[in-house]
Length: 567
Image (cartoon, rainbow, N blue to C red; front, top):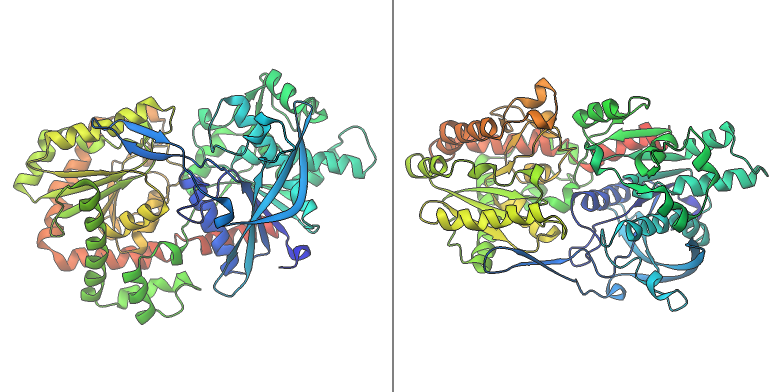
């Protein structure tokens, strides 16, 4: 593509585009990939930048007791990406760190291309420690993480200039990791005006160029770095003295930096927008609910079905609302194919002996305490009795814990322990090395999607959206996107009523939520699956027509175009 036609620069610490290219850790990166795919489908003049992450996130395996073990991921950048001749540099601790870029083109349904550039510091002219700065995604200590954010924020602006992108009008920061791009833009604004001090005019000019999406409803989840380290790595900056730009408790808060220098800020669901406005009361914060790329996350069996009944659905996912006209028998047949593919994989990987005739629940996401992946096991005797007296259940789990998250690793181990305790009544499998390919297999192949975060800590969530595209209803806590997508008994079922009341996560009672989960399974979900086939199949169609047609990145990109990119 002609570089001077690109008007939107999309900056993200992680971007997930190819399963075997481990440049993502989870939802944030996968969302970024889906955003880029929809931008390509819709001819949005975008260019994207991220870091290369030569060592990837990590390869996950389990020992005999279910304890997570991490191993580096070996992958060859030149198998997927094309190296570029352009060079840019940033200053780290007074040293010039050279950067090169690798390119991957994402081609949309119309043939339009969105180029994605991966910044790489592993060059022979760099200091030995600097060469590793683009190796590990979310690895290392605070200094390593801050150095990466310097490379992403400052390096992206400079590399785009070196590559010839001279018509960028908006810089979209996908989370605060890219927040330092605002300071680079501010420096350029001050220099262009031939001034040495920052003025309100400079700040307003930069704000008009910047868009910021925050994904974190928890204060502790926002990146903050101690000022002594910031000054050592980044040097002193005139913005640090500007009250409108920098909020200081002797820390550089990347979220505040991005908030103060962006003309449009949004949360990633309506509820998350409300929470963000309470967290940052001095800022105007909108909400654009996340989505998923329909063409990517619809399994082959349902793609074939949609091609036959709803031609053009890839270009226009809104047309999936016509799924209500698809015969239920054909939906059931497509789902059986997807379920068979998943359970064949599960049985090969884990020897769990799972059966396609059994109700299969799916739970796959990052393993961390607030996600409560063990809520289903709050009362294992009640779960056992439901399976014996109402109908058999089997559960497919997947998800990685951060290498330093010991609590998350213990939760995974808890699933292994419960699996042994319930082996005669409930079949349970925990699949290793959760990635995009496995995520697609699980979201399409289970019968019910289970999500049990501690509200209000789920900013949005997108796995249930992927399930909906494949006719899989959700059984989920009323938080994140599910507050918008849940029509009780129509698109799925709710667990708890907490988010309608408001409040904090400390008020959440696990026993009450678990009791509600067991009640829904015992009295509604399991009986419907085994004895009310037509009603269950209607819910599958509703999941596609009502949720699949709306919770997609085509709708999301349209909202960004209208509200942020060209506003």
